[in-house]
Length: 146
Image 1 (tube, rainbow, N blue to C red):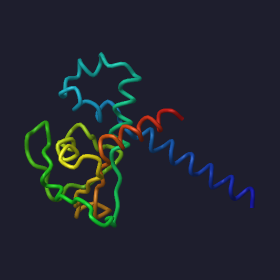
Image 2: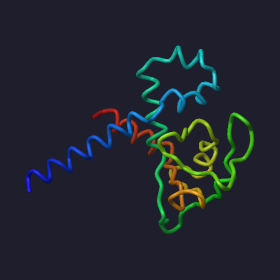
Image 3: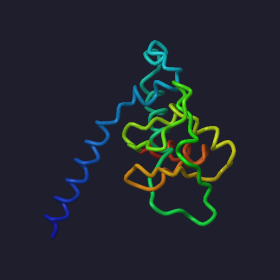
């Protein structure tokens, strides 16, 4: 029994490490500096990690909504690089999704301290959840304090 638990824990640790390695923080944070590579290069590693973690901690996927949830179609989001609305066939990939690449902040501002949801019919899960800015900040601080 102990051996089985150890093996499962080891497999979980390896999977988590592989996920962390596949996250490209420079690409995730690049929109935060207006897609300016030189500004990104001047950013400290600590600040880069904070912004990358904030982006990661802002999102989750789900198939169920809580009562009273605020829900938008994913196509109302705007890609800040192109100025175009996101396609309704947008596929969520939490490993590469950048909080800074889209106008999530506009929707957070409209809804205060509520978690908001976006319908993602082409994704593995029905909804992309976006925590309030305050919740994302607190989650980021907790994640980085470990």
